[in-house]
Image 1 (cartoon, helix red, strand yellow):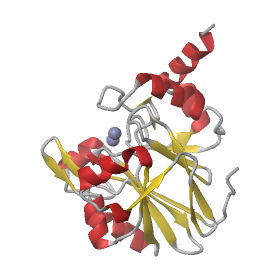
Image 2 (tube, helix red, strand yellow; image 1 turned 180 degrees about the horizontal axis):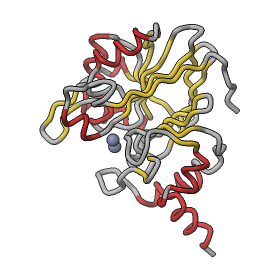
Image 3 (cartoon, rainbow, N blue to C red; image 1 turned 90 degrees about the vertical axis):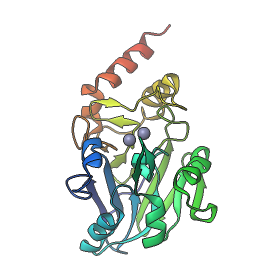
Length: 236
Ligand SMILES: [Zn+2]
Ligand SMILES: [Zn+2]
């Protein structure tokens, strides 16, 4: 059970609105970057640093927070930087230059992250599912949620679930890209995420269908969620 902290800090940054305003591709992709941390120690982690590293660092500085690590939801370039449809997206590599810090990745995607972004092995911390990263009184639990990619992870921290491309308010991540698996996604939705409380707030990796919502509401309203759950419960 995660402890709740009175000093929990979370900031949601929408690419194209809060950061990377000049980036038309970023605006179109509607990616979210998150800062999560502890107001008492003024330390935070950045989830999926991409599109505008200086903008992200400025937002943290504005709140008097220091970025001491990065959490990677999965290894797609719109979340970590790299080449995307011929476009060079800024990401982890620029973060390592401007604000070097450990990068927390699921072990199945560590090699992919290194290959796509060019960061070095020594920057990367390879994690298993259910590992925790602690910042002062605030603890982030790394949940392994394959389906969109083999090493996708969601981050449970305080009353928040930061879900990357695993789950959006109105859908879930594509399973038809390399490494994607519809079966794993179904298991993630109906089993791996099933025991999480309804009163967590879901913070997705893209603003598809909304910016955040209580997990209980998403369970009721997200068509993929209701369909997958129904299919499983109908099974003999
Ligand atoms: Zn993705
Ligand atoms: Zn994405």
